[in-house]
Length: 167
Image (cartoon, rainbow, N blue to C red; front, side, top):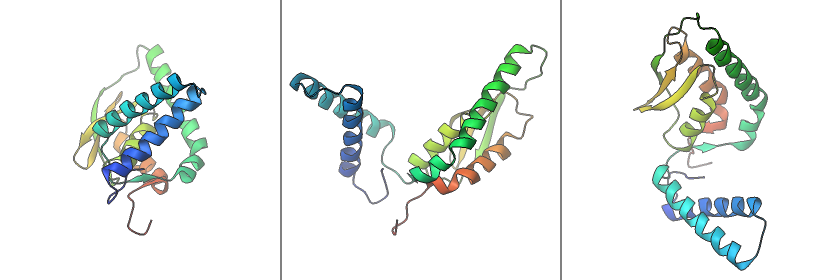
């Protein structure tokens, strides 16, 4: 969506079109009042999105990301079971804390998408960035959290990348 060399105006138009399309999916009405409200909502969402996630490097290859669906679903279920097991077993030892995990993904869309995927790993929640690393809250820092995140980044790497001039 937003790429190096692409103007803020183009990024804004792309995002506004997506938000407006989403509006019409949620409220399939062409009544003038609904259309005006949809345009206002899309404009507000676009402004907020540009403030919170300015156009930067990276892109998501939707087809490659969709191929990760079965793995993503399995990890989601596994993560939910692990957290429930830990919550219901009061004697289980936990060492909650923060782990820093280096990433090669560029800031912006690719890194944010990976953070969303990584949030479904058992007992982890990306909590921010520290330069070229993700800061992750983990339920048990004695586990190899950074290594697991590195393996997931390698797995999702083809779907999340920086855009080059020839893309």
